[in-house]
Amino acid sequence: MTVSVDIKALLEAGVHFGHKTSRWHPKMAPYIHSKRQDAHIIDLTKTVEGLEVALPFITKVVASGKQVLFVGTKKHTKEIVKATAEALKQPYVTERWLGGILTNVATVGNQIKKLKDLEKRMDSGDLEKRYNKLEVQRFQEEIDELNAKYSGIKDLNGKPGAVFIIDVIGDLNAIKEARTLGIPVVAVVDTNADPSLVDYVIPGNDDAIKGIQLLLDYVSAAVKEGLGAVKAVPGEEK
Image 1 (spheres, helix red, strand yellow):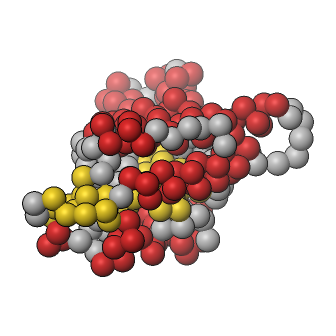
Image 2 (spheres, helix red, strand yellow; image 1 turned 45 degrees about the vertical axis):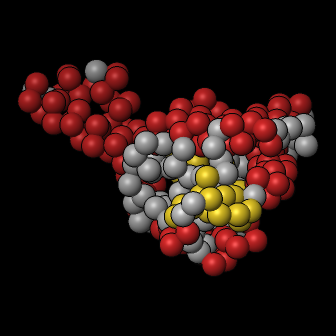
């Protein structure tokens, strides 16, 4: 792995701050260092260990030609999750998780096909030629509505190779669908969440913007490494 994890940077970003001790999940005990006042402190050596296992896995997934689906619907982190995924040209979900995104491929696929078709016809001027202004406006409203739901997964090519999740509790439905299909889940797991739901546990604060950005930077570097490996072997079957 060429991505180097800096424990000092994790500390400075507040990745070690857990939830109140009254809200802890007992299965997180191995990842907790201590208590400070009424809150748990996450053992950052475990965070480093988690990253050192998860990041090479992500690189391997991307190098194999598969995508990583980024999921982060928490209000104050959705923008940085979206920005990271878009920069990497990876699919993402940052609005409400719609049931069936992974498990009901036919229905979701039809909606995305409809969206792409409408966008193509709108951009080419075809709709403007065929319909009056009010009707065109309604088509645009439909495009906007579909984009609000599906814009991040318009270019999801079948089943992703992995799902990366910021908030295990908030995006539990995404985890359930991934597990149903046997898609590995990589996730930031705070002290109030169940780590047994996750294949690659990254123990850490899932609320602090600075901490989430740092963890996203590490994941981003791993994805870029995988993309570099893909480009290094053009024409090879994936």
